[in-house]
Image (tube, rainbow, N blue to C red; front, side):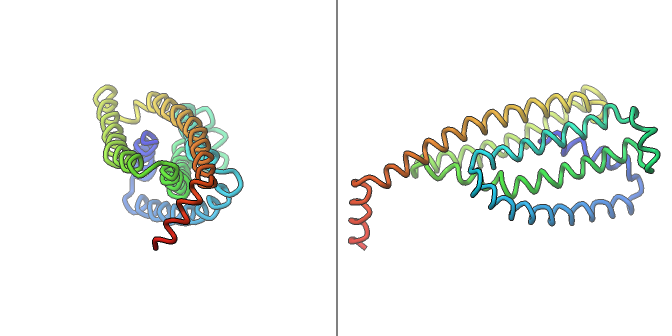
Length: 220
């Protein structure tokens, strides 16, 4: 997903060379992000209740895939639609900026309302030691590694192609690979999560678990 966050600002700066216009656009962008995040948080509660963890985990990469395809298609083949867009007062660059902004808004909203809760829920069926090790691996290694990896990709593309704009086709390929790997991991983890939750519920409903709970209550 970091590839779209790299590419979109490049096109925004080209579409809004005037600093005042750019600031006004970014203000509207921030406001729309807040509204979309609030709406997605309300929708996310319904998703978890209706379809469960697996569907909620797949929404964020699916959103990134759909909006990413639209964004890069406009960047790579936008001139094909230039005559049609001119009839409504748009240019391919401006439409790409709007699609990229919509992608950023929706993906951030999906991250805060669905992805982050899914990440925390994945620790529920784990024991205390596994939770500690898992959170350490994700928060201490996974997050910084992803950000530094995105920065490394950006530097390599700038070095290899001269600018991020020139490397747009390669960004599209990298994004596609990341999202499909993400979907595969989410699908695999969904099965493991459901199985672990069923085992935990079965253990909690067993006579041994009930006796243990009763003993703890009496001790208190």
